[in-house]
Length: 72
Image (tube, rainbow, N blue to C red; front, side, top):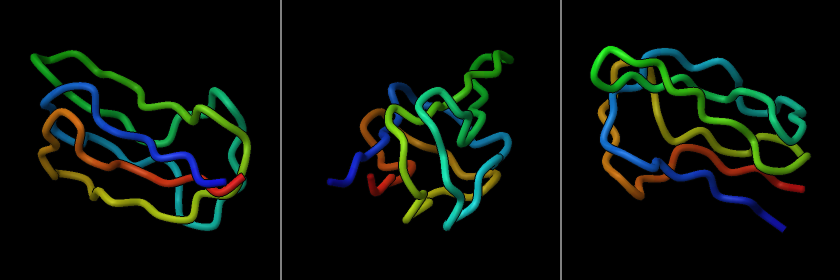
């Protein structure tokens, strides 16, 4: 079962921490967003393998945009 991680707000992708193929656990940071000079970590919500990373550093995401997919 795949778990889609989506943006909760409009923000810039400041740093991509994880890579496709990484094994992640619930609570691991995948990406760090920046909005209004605040850093917002995007965390894995389940254990599994990061099968898709839909953003790159410097991208702008809108609320609801896909950030990553984790296969459990």
